[in-house]
Image (cartoon, rainbow, N blue to C red; front, side, top):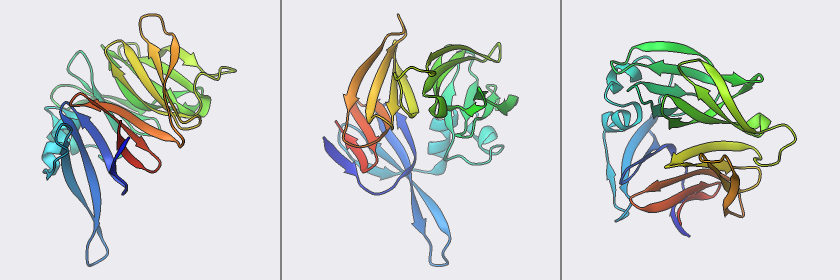
Length: 223
């Protein structure tokens, strides 16, 4: 593995050819200002970007309207549904769904058995999320406003403190901080398999520019 960063970054946002991130800067008066950067996966080149570039990639075409309505733009996860809506989910389960013009069409708390839900991996008009407190992965149907499937949880040890997930083609990749593993779910038969294992907690896994990256407790790595 090749370490990319060992300093703390925020708002890590994978895009097709690389990723964006925010680095805090301490100003002379003690205030904190976010600096926005983009990294090209193939070359490793890092360049400054504007906050509007970051917002457009995170919230979609209606980024100005959506970003003006939310409580913070760093901690939320987003995804783009098949009906051109944007779903936005905070770690505490606070959920918002915005239409293509940036109008909030639904807001509320998304919890499963009173436990907050995290992460967004879009699947048509549905999206998959993890429930860290219950060691489960769920699928939420936005049209019906209900959880339509659960994998793991209960006595199952398939997932241990899952904290993030991503979908590529017909597979979900789930990062388990409790077991230091990235595990997969096949959306063809819902089978769970091991994919990667590390010596420390794994927080995020993603692809960019044909390369694999993981965010571990000690930093961001290219595999």
